[in-house]
Image 1 (spheres, rainbow, N blue to C red):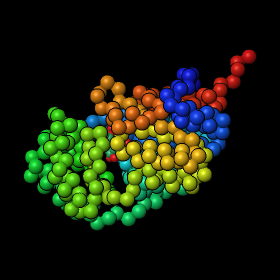
Image 2 (image 1 turned 135 degrees about the vertical axis):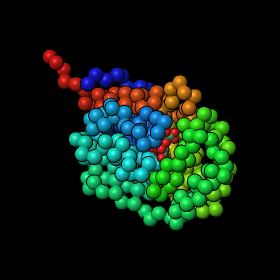
Image 3 (image 1 turned 120 degrees about the horizontal axis):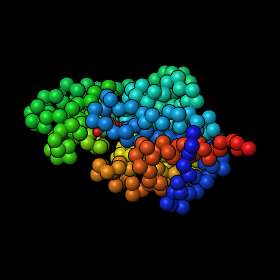
Image 4 (image 1 turned 90 degrees about the vertical axis):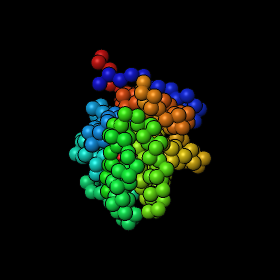
Length: 289
Ligand SMILES: O=P(O)(O)OC[C@H]1O[C@H](O[C@H]2O[C@H](CO)[C@@H](O)[C@H](O)[C@H]2O)[C@H](O)[C@@H](O)[C@@H]1O
Protein backbone atom coordinates (compact mmCIF):
# COMPACT_ATOMS: atom_id res chain seq x y z
CA UNK A 1 0.00 0.00 0.00
CA UNK A 2 1.45 3.43 -0.90
CA UNK A 3 2.06 5.57 2.16
CA UNK A 4 2.67 9.28 2.56
CA UNK A 5 5.57 10.82 4.45
CA UNK A 6 5.53 10.77 8.24
CA UNK A 7 4.28 14.13 9.53
CA UNK A 8 6.57 16.06 11.86
CA UNK A 9 5.12 16.89 15.30
CA UNK A 10 5.11 20.61 16.07
CA UNK A 11 6.60 20.21 19.56
CA UNK A 12 9.96 19.03 20.83
CA UNK A 13 8.27 16.51 23.15
CA UNK A 14 6.26 15.12 20.24
CA UNK A 15 9.30 14.82 17.96
CA UNK A 16 11.21 13.10 20.76
CA UNK A 17 8.41 10.56 21.22
CA UNK A 18 8.12 9.86 17.50
CA UNK A 19 11.89 9.33 17.30
CA UNK A 20 11.70 6.97 20.29
CA UNK A 21 8.91 4.97 18.63
CA UNK A 22 10.84 4.69 15.36
CA UNK A 23 14.04 3.68 17.18
CA UNK A 24 12.38 1.03 19.38
CA UNK A 25 8.88 0.17 18.12
CA UNK A 26 8.80 -2.95 20.29
CA UNK A 27 8.71 -0.68 23.35
CA UNK A 28 5.85 1.50 22.13
CA UNK A 29 2.16 1.58 23.01
CA UNK A 30 -0.28 3.02 20.48
CA UNK A 31 -3.62 4.00 22.05
CA UNK A 32 -6.47 5.54 20.08
CA UNK A 33 -9.94 6.80 20.79
CA UNK A 34 -12.80 5.39 18.64
CA UNK A 35 -15.51 7.95 17.69
CA UNK A 36 -14.07 10.87 15.77
CA UNK A 37 -10.60 9.32 15.72
CA UNK A 38 -10.84 5.83 14.23
CA UNK A 39 -14.48 6.24 13.24
CA UNK A 40 -15.93 9.19 11.29
CA UNK A 41 -18.64 11.10 13.17
CA UNK A 42 -22.15 10.24 11.96
CA UNK A 43 -25.58 11.47 13.11
CA UNK A 44 -26.70 8.13 14.59
CA UNK A 45 -24.22 6.59 17.07
CA UNK A 46 -25.48 3.09 16.22
CA UNK A 47 -24.35 3.60 12.61
CA UNK A 48 -20.78 4.56 13.42
CA UNK A 49 -18.16 2.24 11.89
CA UNK A 50 -14.39 2.24 11.86
CA UNK A 51 -12.85 4.07 8.92
CA UNK A 52 -12.31 1.47 6.18
CA UNK A 53 -8.56 1.98 6.40
CA UNK A 54 -8.37 1.72 10.19
CA UNK A 55 -8.24 -2.04 10.74
CA UNK A 56 -5.79 -2.69 7.86
CA UNK A 57 -3.47 0.06 9.11
CA UNK A 58 -3.67 -1.08 12.75
CA UNK A 59 -3.10 -4.67 11.65
CA UNK A 60 0.08 -3.68 9.83
CA UNK A 61 1.37 -1.77 12.82
CA UNK A 62 0.32 -3.90 15.76
CA UNK A 63 2.75 -6.82 15.25
CA UNK A 64 5.65 -4.37 15.39
CA UNK A 65 4.59 -2.54 18.56
CA UNK A 66 4.54 -3.56 22.20
CA UNK A 67 0.78 -3.02 22.38
CA UNK A 68 -2.17 -1.38 20.66
CA UNK A 69 -5.30 -0.28 22.51
CA UNK A 70 -8.56 1.43 21.65
CA UNK A 71 -9.65 3.63 24.56
CA UNK A 72 -13.28 4.63 24.26
CA UNK A 73 -16.39 5.86 26.02
CA UNK A 74 -18.37 3.15 24.21
CA UNK A 75 -19.10 -0.15 25.91
CA UNK A 76 -16.11 -2.38 25.06
CA UNK A 77 -18.14 -5.00 23.21
CA UNK A 78 -19.90 -2.37 21.12
CA UNK A 79 -16.63 -0.74 20.08
CA UNK A 80 -15.30 -4.17 19.08
CA UNK A 81 -18.38 -4.78 16.92
CA UNK A 82 -18.49 -1.30 15.34
CA UNK A 83 -14.75 -1.41 14.77
CA UNK A 84 -14.72 -4.88 13.24
CA UNK A 85 -11.81 -5.73 15.53
CA UNK A 86 -12.67 -9.32 16.52
CA UNK A 87 -10.81 -11.94 14.53
CA UNK A 88 -8.92 -9.40 12.41
CA UNK A 89 -5.59 -10.91 11.36
CA UNK A 90 -2.79 -8.84 12.88
CA UNK A 91 -4.95 -7.65 15.78
CA UNK A 92 -4.62 -10.82 17.89
CA UNK A 93 -3.18 -8.77 20.78
CA UNK A 94 -5.52 -5.78 20.55
CA UNK A 95 -7.09 -4.48 23.77
CA UNK A 96 -10.22 -2.33 23.91
CA UNK A 97 -10.60 -0.30 27.10
CA UNK A 98 -14.30 0.57 27.01
CA UNK A 99 -16.63 2.74 29.10
CA UNK A 100 -13.70 5.00 29.95
CA UNK A 101 -11.80 2.03 31.37
CA UNK A 102 -14.60 0.38 33.35
CA UNK A 103 -14.72 -2.42 30.75
CA UNK A 104 -11.97 -4.29 28.94
CA UNK A 105 -11.94 -6.63 25.96
CA UNK A 106 -8.85 -8.53 24.88
CA UNK A 107 -8.64 -10.07 21.43
CA UNK A 108 -6.55 -12.86 22.94
CA UNK A 109 -9.43 -14.11 25.09
CA UNK A 110 -12.35 -12.59 23.19
CA UNK A 111 -13.88 -11.79 26.57
CA UNK A 112 -15.05 -8.65 28.32
CA UNK A 113 -14.17 -7.96 31.93
CA UNK A 114 -16.32 -5.24 33.51
CA UNK A 115 -16.66 -3.42 36.82
CA UNK A 116 -20.06 -3.58 38.55
CA UNK A 117 -22.61 -0.98 37.45
CA UNK A 118 -23.44 1.51 40.25
CA UNK A 119 -27.17 1.64 41.15
CA UNK A 120 -27.44 5.33 40.21
CA UNK A 121 -27.35 4.30 36.55
CA UNK A 122 -30.64 2.40 36.83
CA UNK A 123 -32.23 5.36 38.60
CA UNK A 124 -31.14 7.76 35.85
CA UNK A 125 -32.38 5.32 33.18
CA UNK A 126 -35.77 5.41 34.90
CA UNK A 127 -35.98 9.19 35.33
CA UNK A 128 -34.36 10.52 32.16
CA UNK A 129 -37.19 10.11 29.60
CA UNK A 130 -39.70 11.90 31.83
CA UNK A 131 -37.19 14.67 32.55
CA UNK A 132 -36.59 15.25 28.83
CA UNK A 133 -40.34 15.40 28.25
CA UNK A 134 -40.78 17.83 31.12
CA UNK A 135 -38.01 20.03 29.70
CA UNK A 136 -39.60 19.89 26.23
CA UNK A 137 -36.24 18.75 24.83
CA UNK A 138 -36.05 19.71 21.14
CA UNK A 139 -37.15 17.17 18.52
CA UNK A 140 -34.21 14.98 17.61
CA UNK A 141 -32.85 14.73 21.17
CA UNK A 142 -31.90 11.08 21.70
CA UNK A 143 -30.98 8.92 24.68
CA UNK A 144 -28.22 6.37 24.11
CA UNK A 145 -28.35 3.65 26.77
CA UNK A 146 -24.81 2.41 27.20
CA UNK A 147 -25.52 -0.04 30.01
CA UNK A 148 -23.34 1.68 32.58
CA UNK A 149 -24.06 5.23 31.39
CA UNK A 150 -26.78 7.20 29.63
CA UNK A 151 -25.84 9.67 26.91
CA UNK A 152 -28.13 12.46 25.77
CA UNK A 153 -27.36 13.39 22.14
CA UNK A 154 -28.48 16.60 20.43
CA UNK A 155 -26.71 16.17 17.05
CA UNK A 156 -30.02 15.47 15.33
CA UNK A 157 -31.82 18.55 16.66
CA UNK A 158 -32.10 21.75 14.59
CA UNK A 159 -29.62 23.59 16.81
CA UNK A 160 -27.46 21.00 18.61
CA UNK A 161 -25.34 23.44 20.61
CA UNK A 162 -28.20 25.45 22.08
CA UNK A 163 -30.22 22.26 22.66
CA UNK A 164 -27.33 20.89 24.71
CA UNK A 165 -26.92 24.16 26.58
CA UNK A 166 -30.62 24.20 27.46
CA UNK A 167 -30.47 20.67 28.87
CA UNK A 168 -27.15 20.99 30.64
CA UNK A 169 -28.17 22.29 34.09
CA UNK A 170 -31.08 19.86 34.70
CA UNK A 171 -29.02 16.91 33.44
CA UNK A 172 -26.12 17.86 35.69
CA UNK A 173 -28.57 18.08 38.61
CA UNK A 174 -30.04 14.65 37.79
CA UNK A 175 -26.58 13.09 37.53
CA UNK A 176 -25.47 14.58 40.82
CA UNK A 177 -28.66 13.51 42.60
CA UNK A 178 -27.95 9.92 41.56
CA UNK A 179 -24.22 9.89 42.27
CA UNK A 180 -23.19 10.16 38.62
CA UNK A 181 -21.36 12.85 36.66
CA UNK A 182 -22.51 14.68 33.56
CA UNK A 183 -19.58 14.84 31.14
CA UNK A 184 -19.82 16.81 27.89
CA UNK A 185 -18.65 15.66 24.47
CA UNK A 186 -19.34 16.47 20.85
CA UNK A 187 -23.09 17.30 20.92
CA UNK A 188 -23.60 14.90 23.80
CA UNK A 189 -23.81 14.94 27.57
CA UNK A 190 -22.97 11.63 29.20
CA UNK A 191 -24.36 10.75 32.61
CA UNK A 192 -21.85 8.27 33.90
CA UNK A 193 -20.39 6.92 37.13
CA UNK A 194 -17.41 8.77 38.56
CA UNK A 195 -14.12 6.99 38.99
CA UNK A 196 -13.30 5.81 35.49
CA UNK A 197 -11.58 8.01 32.95
CA UNK A 198 -9.30 7.50 29.98
CA UNK A 199 -6.30 8.81 31.92
CA UNK A 200 -6.52 6.14 34.60
CA UNK A 201 -7.20 3.46 31.99
CA UNK A 202 -4.22 4.51 29.87
CA UNK A 203 -1.81 4.81 32.81
CA UNK A 204 -2.75 1.38 34.11
CA UNK A 205 -2.27 -0.12 30.65
CA UNK A 206 1.14 1.54 30.23
CA UNK A 207 2.21 0.07 33.59
CA UNK A 208 0.85 -3.37 32.71
CA UNK A 209 2.55 -3.52 29.31
CA UNK A 210 5.77 -1.86 30.48
CA UNK A 211 5.61 0.41 27.45
CA UNK A 212 8.55 2.80 27.16
CA UNK A 213 6.89 5.17 24.67
CA UNK A 214 3.25 6.09 24.29
CA UNK A 215 1.26 7.58 21.42
CA UNK A 216 -2.30 8.70 22.21
CA UNK A 217 -4.79 9.99 19.66
CA UNK A 218 -8.20 11.49 20.37
CA UNK A 219 -10.68 14.12 19.26
CA UNK A 220 -12.93 15.09 22.16
CA UNK A 221 -13.12 16.37 25.73
CA UNK A 222 -13.17 12.82 27.12
CA UNK A 223 -9.65 12.41 25.73
CA UNK A 224 -8.22 15.22 27.86
CA UNK A 225 -7.72 12.87 30.82
CA UNK A 226 -5.58 10.64 28.57
CA UNK A 227 -3.61 13.69 27.45
CA UNK A 228 -3.00 14.53 31.13
CA UNK A 229 -1.81 10.97 31.72
CA UNK A 230 0.66 11.19 28.82
CA UNK A 231 2.03 14.45 30.23
CA UNK A 232 2.46 12.79 33.65
CA UNK A 233 4.20 9.82 32.04
CA UNK A 234 6.57 12.18 30.25
CA UNK A 235 7.48 13.49 33.70
CA UNK A 236 8.46 9.91 34.59
CA UNK A 237 10.70 9.67 31.51
CA UNK A 238 8.25 7.94 29.14
CA UNK A 239 8.22 9.84 25.83
CA UNK A 240 4.68 10.61 24.72
CA UNK A 241 3.14 11.84 21.49
CA UNK A 242 -0.27 13.55 21.66
CA UNK A 243 -2.22 13.34 18.42
CA UNK A 244 -5.49 15.21 17.79
CA UNK A 245 -7.93 14.22 15.07
CA UNK A 246 -9.25 17.67 14.25
CA UNK A 247 -12.75 17.86 12.76
CA UNK A 248 -12.62 19.24 9.25
CA UNK A 249 -14.86 22.05 8.06
CA UNK A 250 -17.62 21.43 10.60
CA UNK A 251 -16.59 23.93 13.27
CA UNK A 252 -16.57 20.96 15.63
CA UNK A 253 -12.92 20.83 16.58
CA UNK A 254 -12.31 20.84 20.31
CA UNK A 255 -9.81 23.67 21.01
CA UNK A 256 -9.12 22.42 24.55
CA UNK A 257 -7.66 19.31 22.93
CA UNK A 258 -6.20 20.56 19.65
CA UNK A 259 -4.29 23.34 21.43
CA UNK A 260 -2.42 20.70 23.45
CA UNK A 261 -1.67 18.26 20.63
CA UNK A 262 1.86 17.67 19.40
CA UNK A 263 0.45 16.60 16.07
CA UNK A 264 -2.81 17.66 14.42
CA UNK A 265 -4.25 15.43 11.71
CA UNK A 266 -7.45 15.91 9.71
CA UNK A 267 -10.00 13.59 11.37
CA UNK A 268 -10.09 9.81 10.93
CA UNK A 269 -8.72 10.17 7.36
CA UNK A 270 -5.66 11.83 8.86
CA UNK A 271 -5.37 9.24 11.62
CA UNK A 272 -5.40 6.41 9.10
CA UNK A 273 -2.83 8.23 6.94
CA UNK A 274 -0.63 8.63 10.03
CA UNK A 275 -0.94 4.93 10.90
CA UNK A 276 -0.12 3.96 7.30
CA UNK A 277 2.88 6.28 7.29
CA UNK A 278 4.09 4.80 10.59
CA UNK A 279 3.67 1.26 9.28
CA UNK A 280 5.51 2.24 6.10
CA UNK A 281 8.36 3.77 8.10
CA UNK A 282 8.68 0.68 10.30
CA UNK A 283 8.58 -1.82 7.45
CA UNK A 284 9.43 -0.09 4.19
CA UNK A 285 8.24 -1.81 1.01
CA UNK A 286 11.00 -4.03 -0.43
CA UNK A 287 13.15 -2.46 -3.13
CA UNK A 288 11.85 -3.79 -6.50
CA UNK A 289 15.49 -4.13 -7.79
O1 LIG B 1 -14.50 7.86 23.46
P1 LIG B 1 -15.10 7.79 22.10
O2 LIG B 1 -14.80 6.53 21.38
O3 LIG B 1 -14.78 9.00 21.26
O4 LIG B 1 -16.67 7.84 22.35
C1 LIG B 1 -17.26 9.05 22.82
C2 LIG B 1 -18.75 9.03 22.51
O5 LIG B 1 -18.85 8.89 21.10
C3 LIG B 1 -20.12 8.66 20.53
O6 LIG B 1 -20.71 9.91 20.29
C4 LIG B 1 -20.02 10.66 19.31
O7 LIG B 1 -20.04 9.93 18.06
C5 LIG B 1 -21.36 9.74 17.49
C6 LIG B 1 -21.22 8.85 16.26
O8 LIG B 1 -20.35 9.40 15.32
C7 LIG B 1 -21.98 11.11 17.21
O9 LIG B 1 -23.28 10.94 16.65
C8 LIG B 1 -22.06 11.92 18.51
O10 LIG B 1 -22.51 13.24 18.23
C9 LIG B 1 -20.66 12.02 19.15
O11 LIG B 1 -20.73 12.65 20.42
C10 LIG B 1 -20.98 7.71 21.32
O12 LIG B 1 -22.31 7.77 20.89
C11 LIG B 1 -20.88 7.88 22.80
O13 LIG B 1 -21.52 6.80 23.46
C12 LIG B 1 -19.42 7.84 23.16
O14 LIG B 1 -19.24 7.88 24.56
